[in-house]
View 1 (cartoon, rainbow, N blue to C red):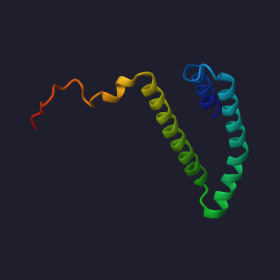
View 2: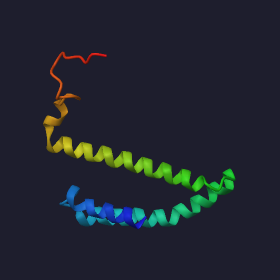
View 3: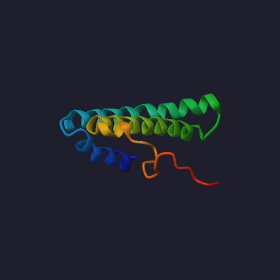
View 4: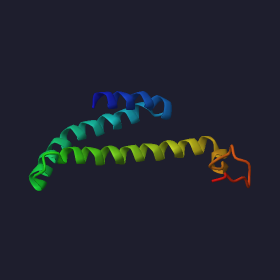
Length: 102
């Protein structure tokens, strides 16, 4: 968990150079809440489901949501910085109208 948090702190000055303090505080807040809420959730899930590995299912869901959220946030920032990215074709190396033989 600490390696993941350190990686997040590494990206803050790159993606949010004007708001390093505020974003760092929010990251710390979310980390503190996660350290408080996740163990309680692990116990509750174990009691509700009776499956000892339900904590890993919850962690998988949390990580999946966070990865999707970060991916979409980075894409949005890149599109704002480089508007020409909106008009790129999916395979720019192929000429228009060409097809591959199958």
